[in-house]
Length: 434
Image (cartoon, rainbow, N blue to C red; front, top):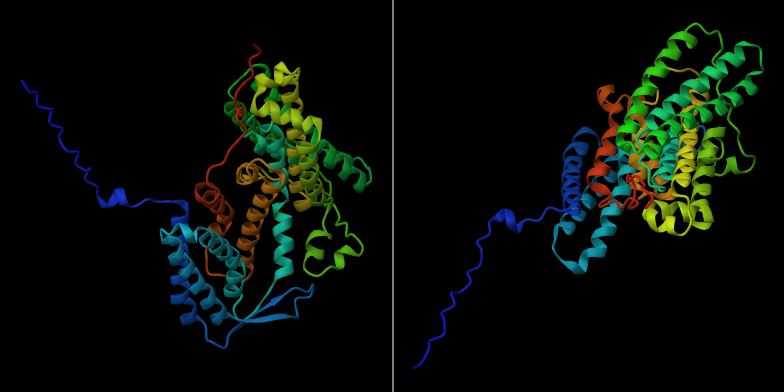
């Protein structure tokens, strides 16, 4: 008697639609955006400007000498590079992966000179001034991002940086106003005002640490409480103290570094700044050194990545987190002093205008590293300076839309440019000692 083997039905391939065959990637999205931008430039710039129109890109302090750039010719070349680069990046050829990456990166850098040439067509645009403004406007964002790194590297989410900056801006200026009105020298009053701003940020950070570390409150909720409290507190102090004060507007003076300030292009941008601007550079370098080359930095990173393993090695996890959050708040308070004591010489309600949240975006952009966060802050500083330059040159765009530029850049960067960010593994997780 023979047994017949069971019949196995053939496996039919699943039917696929065109939606299943199209894979949307960040690289593909940016490639399409570059193609659209290049096509827009090709259609609009030659139609609005003659071939004889030039833009003078200057680098000297007076803005009188520079390099004449043909507006239409330069814009058309960049637009063609955009379209070609976008098409190449859409090709599914693995061998072109390195070329595709660098082409997209170069196109990103070309956006800056192209936009400067177009918006100043027939006139001049000072590259040095643009760089100086970018560095200046990036100062609170970079300092705020460094503040976030100190806290989150230890495992404590700190979305309260905005509130700490706002409190530092207000209380620092209140201290300066009271001291200056009492007859103390303006310079001494300014220095003490900066110290008061740092202390104010530290006090708000102490509240955040008390809630999120000691009582293990949800860290996002705790940070939100800090932000709401700061809005109400600073508005009250402005109404009760500052409106009737008689202190004159007096900003921190610039401190040019002899010799270095005369370096072309970068000299006026980096070495003719004010004290808090210099502190930004110092904080970036110092934080990098402490984080990666000291015992405290090693312990902080251990606490942020695996607090239970750090605890078994004898590291006091909650104490480490407390100290790092306090340092974070003091740095954020210094960033707040930039608004009142170094830049505006006055205080207005909600003066930080969301720069604390942009600082968090810069921190994420930099993958929780000091130099990466500084690069993100400079990107947002440039976008802010670009919006202001549009207004100065009379670009026919509503001022409200120009003020949105740095926030739009924030959305674009977080949504597509940075890819997958990797925070410390224990970031936002309360520590329970076993």
